[in-house]
Amino acid sequence: MEIFRPKTRTVKIRDILAQRGKGVSLEFFPPKTPAGREAFMKHVHELKGYDPLFVSVTCSPGSVTHERTVHAISWIREETTLSPMPHLTCINATEADIDRVLRVYISKGVENVLALRGDPPRDAPGIASAKGDFTNARDLVLFAQKYHVFSLGVAVYPEGHQESLSLEQDIEYTRMKVDAGADFAIAQMFFDNSYFYAYREKARKAGITIPILPGIMPVTDCRKIEEFANFCSVTIPDALRKKMHPFLDKPEEMAKLGVEYSVKQCEDLRKNGVTFLHFYTMNKPAIISWILEALQNESDPFRRSGEAG
Image (cartoon, rainbow, N blue to C red):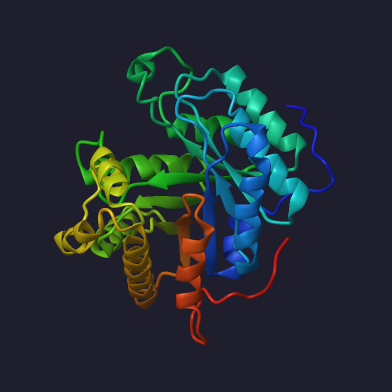
């Protein structure tokens, strides 16, 4: 397979994780139009000083062109020296669709991809059963491996994917994605660390040794978090619910509570041997900055190590 590869390429995430051994990564979502470039890049620039391991960019549910993600990844490449990773979903996509997108990323020197099946758009749930060449993320990993270019990440679900029959089945699916060529995994959000620890232990017993980065979602909007948690079958601890509900219509107090909870969550993860953290920024750099600043001290493995980009 003939591939054009530019001279300037991103560092593969598998190598970044192995070389640095600790740090944070950041996830952003792309703007709906190219006109949103300035605001999007402002968010990225505000957080690049925390020297992230990499930054990821989500894609729209059901998209096969990934146009918004391609634009955002291009901007990051043009304006920074950060290592960007596009999310790549394959639901309803043909091999030709995915080939086009992967070749675009290769032409831009992007050699990291988060391979996902993806969810159907909520306004078009029937797309899940539409004809496509990929059944699941494992199929996408196998396809992307053929290019011999990418460091491939996959998603894992500490409480089990909402469509899985059991956590054991979920672990088996993860093992299949790793066997197909996944280098690392990013966990879906969770608010009770015990789920992550249990998943990590089960994964190790199943022979899964790739890095698993816990996904941290700061609680800044109670209603949206509850809606998303219900959709993803994620548990919100009763203690957290009781703290959130008095602040339903008090965004400043809600943000403060969310930061405090995330800081405690990260501190507990650190005490239990976690050296990587992946933050779902929701394009709210101020919230992430508050969390990272609170975590910084002389013994903190997530302490800022310099400027980037």
